[in-house]
Image 1 (tube, rainbow, N blue to C red):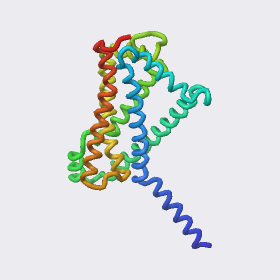
Image 2: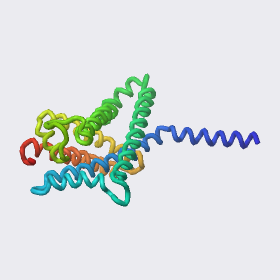
Image 3: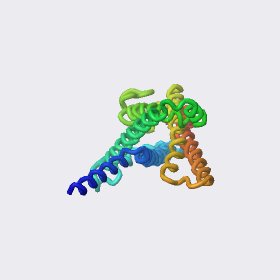
Image 4: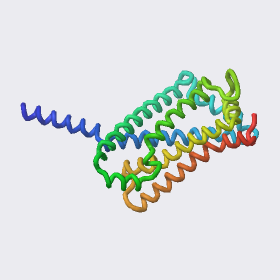
Amino acid sequence: MATKLVTRDSSRTANNRAVHSTVFRKVLMSVTGLLFVVFLLMHMFGNLKLLIPNVGLQEFDEYSHFLRTFLYPMLPYRFFLTLFEILLVVALLIHMEAAIRLTFRDYDARMGMGRYLKQRYLAGSFAARTMIWSGVLIFLGVIYHILQFTTQTVTVGYDGTAEPHMRVILGFQELWMVLLYGFWVLLVSLHIYHGFYSAFCTLGARVGAFSAKVIKACSVIVCLLVFFGFMASPLAIYFGLVTA
């Protein structure tokens, strides 16, 4: 009986160590990070509807409304969107928790490494070294983005409430808003550049020099796609190419 008890305790201890291991947290960060990349690409293509000549504004409003009525009346109004938002919030909390723990664990492991630490720091990319800080700024930007374009708690260029396309057009007629949004999108793009590459490496896609180059090329493509895709509409609005 004693032997069995020790074996069970050892098994639970091993499982516990695995769940709290660095590798497991990196996998969590990878999966949740890739989920956000997919969401961003979907959101980006929806925003690009504003650039469609003649019918773009109407299609953008229909797209915004569709998110709230998807699978209605089979499901209650906004039911699917609420579930999706809950999924994103849970994924965000998991991503942030893993990132914070890995950052502090890495910091503790580096203490006293001196010359090696300095060489490793210089060898790393700017995006990699600033992931935790860009993540914090991105999170704050997401909160502001929701307050402005979803809840309309913050309004730019108008008072009261406005249709979805008007919120965007009136907001991005202000230069400071375009610059602030551009800075935030740049942070998101740099975050994706390093995160996309790291995620596929963590999940085992890097099996040699060629695969590493392919993953790096894909991370660059996704990074540029996100930046220019999200900046296309604000710039078109500011320079008068898209009007209400």
